Length: 205
Image 1 (cartoon, rainbow, N blue to C red):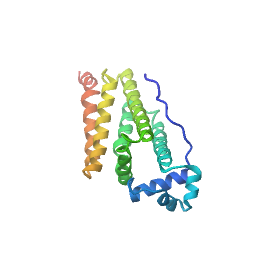
Image 2 (cartoon, helix red, strand yellow):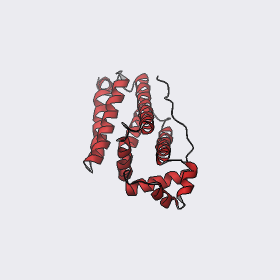
Image 3 (cartoon, helix red, strand yellow):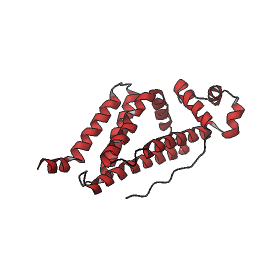
Image 4 (cartoon, rainbow, N blue to C red):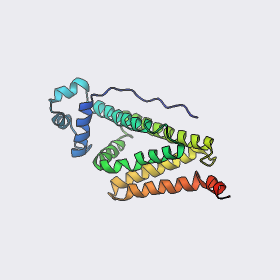
């Protein structure tokens, strides 16, 4: 089983993070300013700069904040069986974002800056590594328990991540309301075809 990838630790001011979330949903990444975040925060821009020197520093902390909340959610399902854990992980990746479409747009805008912004690139890389780690871990566990077919867990993980990333991107770029639901169904079809193929045949015999 692979080692847990290291993540940047941070202790962001939760009220500022929530203000940043609201400002991103309202204005998007392109029109986001410290002033607008401060307005949502209910304090002056100086209060924001007391914690974060630049908007980039603040947004880097915000990406950490989002990842931390995702990790907390995932940890809540770590004690369930592998099949249920995988279902819940995929729900968090493809069902939950449907309730936060504006934020999904803003995060995709920030992801688009990664070729030019090393700080953002590092955060998104950490996020990707952690999500892949969690998926690969539950797949490995299912294989060891005999509930999943003995397959290349790394390949399956990357395939599922491709479905997740593609679904999220299409949901934003094409504004298709059913894209995430389609991606979630596709992920289930892939899991059934690849991870449950041999185990299903064994049950039939």
